[in-house]
Image 1: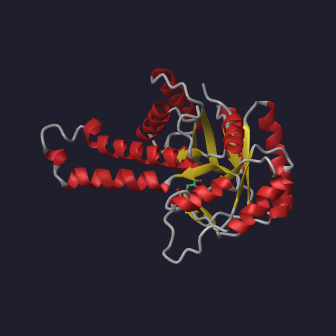
Image 2: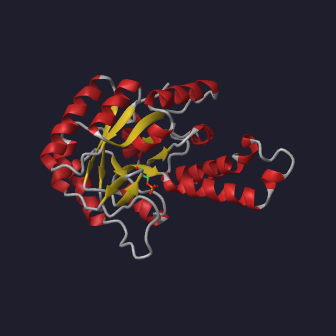
Image 3: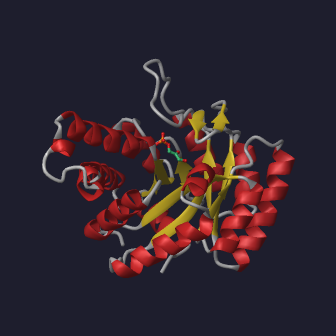
Length: 287
Ligand code: 13P
């Protein structure tokens, strides 16, 4: 059964570790992440961007697939199905479709409008036991058509949004979606520390988990980050493993073209990436 992200993130905040959000794109992605979480006894959050939602034939299809896999694979660890960088309308659709968690990314609105819309969604989702992530200060880079200019969050605005009763808060602290450029200035830990102080027990979310060095991840967790989002790194791992398989001509050997064989190296590469991240984030054995 899908669960809200609330309990798993409150436990992570208290226990000083982070739960990974891994974005899904298809059946292989979802199965790889769920099986790894079960093997490592780790809670997990499956992230779905609006673009990936369309690609996978809509939110109800995804809810059906994930619930089906949880049953058929015998998954016992807590799993939240979460809309990533949702619009106001997208969040409402996911709430109706059976997601257990939604992000409303109102960071591009003036703060008053972000507050008003977040508040309304907290009320709607809260009544159904669905967790809500809000965002202040934009995450840099581009993810599935959502472009952010990398604005660092204002700690006072973070407090205003946290006080609305959101479950978790994403704050821009110099993090970027996709690969980090060579001249990246790193995470702004001063701002993270101020946000953490002002928002007290609120689990904080670090987007753009791909390519952040391990020491920065650990420092961010020590300063109150309890959820870390990873997307691009699984995509890179899948693409590299698939490329090697094809370049080695394995698709031409015997029945190597069978999709179950062709996609297997990429599937194993996602599992390895998710394992590495869960170990780094400290969520292993915390289910
Ligand atoms: P990356 O693609 O950089 O890992 O970021 C993922 C993310 O933040 C999803 O919201």
